[in-house]
Amino acid sequence: MTITAIKQQVKQAGRYSVFVDGKYSFSLSEVALLESGIHSGLELDTSKLAEFKTMSANDKAYGRALHYAMIRPRSEWELRTYLQRKQADPETAERIIAKLRRNDLVNDLAFARSWVASRRLLKATSRRRLTQELHQKRVSDDVIQQVLHEDETDERETLREIIAKKRQQSKYKADDVKLMQYLARQGYSYDDIKSVLQEEG
Image (cartoon, rainbow, N blue to C red):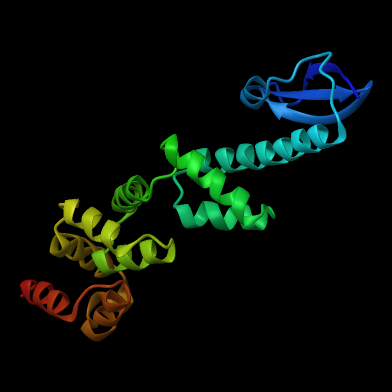
């Protein structure tokens, strides 16, 4: 068997189709193609062709994971779960995660920092709620503690902002019990809620 042609794909400019004995056989990204040493005229046996096809499948899985990671920051757990959904075998998934980690494209500390910063921009959010959200993304306790330690947001100030907004709604205007229940569900402590409500005089 011989590689007879290597053609750039029309729909995916960074990907190349490899033809063996005149027929399409597999595809590789530009980087994988350069790393593989594949070229027109290369003679292949059955085992070498199978090796290149496995490389192609792994390369496609990496490309999907890379695209997924570039849409927005992801935790390692999110990427691992994504690869499971795409039916990548565990060994391949771990290699892909390791490669993304080496290229600093997946980093739970950077992810957690980005998550907290974006949530702070969107609305007032309690530290407890942020901790719950990061736990859901399977971020480690050490990383969560570090990120929240770096966060200089005044918890009581965010609480004041929420209370001021909620007081404009009729159901919370004069009902402290309902308001306290709502704030507790948002992750604020009883002591902080009680203290800030007392400030209203």
